[in-house]
Image 1 (cartoon, rainbow, N blue to C red):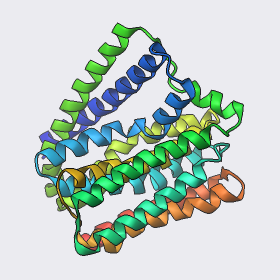
Image 2 (cartoon, rainbow, N blue to C red):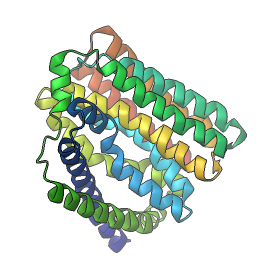
Image 3 (cartoon, helix red, strand yellow):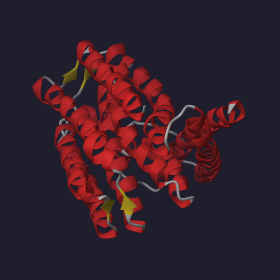
Image 4 (cartoon, rainbow, N blue to C red):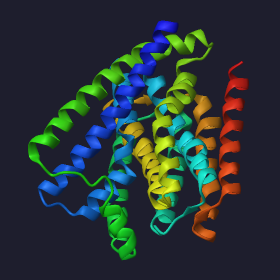
Length: 316
C-alpha cells in the first residue's frame, strides 16, 4: 500500500504539471492565431482547470472503473465549493464582479436536478448523456454572450489570464509535454488509487468521491488561495462554477453518451443532493452583495467537512 501511495503522489504531481502545461499552450496558441483574448480567458478560467479531472475520469472510464470516475466527477463538485472556495474565502474575502456567474450557477443547479431526476431509474442513457453534452455547448454560448456585457475591467482581467508567449513551436511542445504528463498521471492514479482505497476500507465510489476528488483539487485549492490574496475573486468563483458545470455536463454526460452509465442509488439519495446543497449555499452569497466573506468561507468549509464525515459514517 505504501508503494501505491507513492505512485499516487507522483501521479498527482504529473496531473498538476500537465494541466498547467496544457493551459499555457492553449493560451499561447489562442494569441498566435488571433482568437479573442477575452473569450479565451473566460473559457480557460471557467473550464480549462478541469483538465486533470477529465484525464483521470477518461482513463477510469476506458479501463471500466466507471464508479471511480463517477465518484470523482461528483465529488470534485462538492470539493470545489466546500474546500477550494471555502479556503480561498477564508484566506481573503472574495469580491465578485462577474455578474454572469449567478445565471451560470442557476444552470449548475438545474443540471444537478436533471441528473437526480434522470438517475432515479439507476442509469443515465446514451441519449440523456448526449443531451447533457449539448447543454454544455449552450452553457458556453450563454457564458460568452453574458460576458460581453461585463465591465471593461473584468473583461481585461479575464483576457489577461495566463498570458504567455505566442510562439507556435513553444506552445506545441507545451501541449505535447502536458499530454504526456496527463496520460501517465491518469494511468498511475487509476491503477494505484483503488489499492489505497481498499487498504483504507473504501469502495471504488467512495475512493473517487473523497480520495481522488480531494487529491486532484489540492493544487487548485492552493492556486485559489493565492488568487484570493491577489484580489482575483472573479477567477476563483468562476473556476469553481465553471469546473463544476464541466464535470457534470461533459465528464458525466460524455461518459453516458459513449455507454449507458449506471447511477448508484446512493448518488440519487445523498451525493447529488449534497452537490446540489453546496451550489444552493453559494447562490445567496452571489445575489446579495457579490462578495463571499470569511465567515461565509468558514460555512462552506465546515459544510464540506460535515459531508466527508457523513460519507465515512455511512460507509461503515
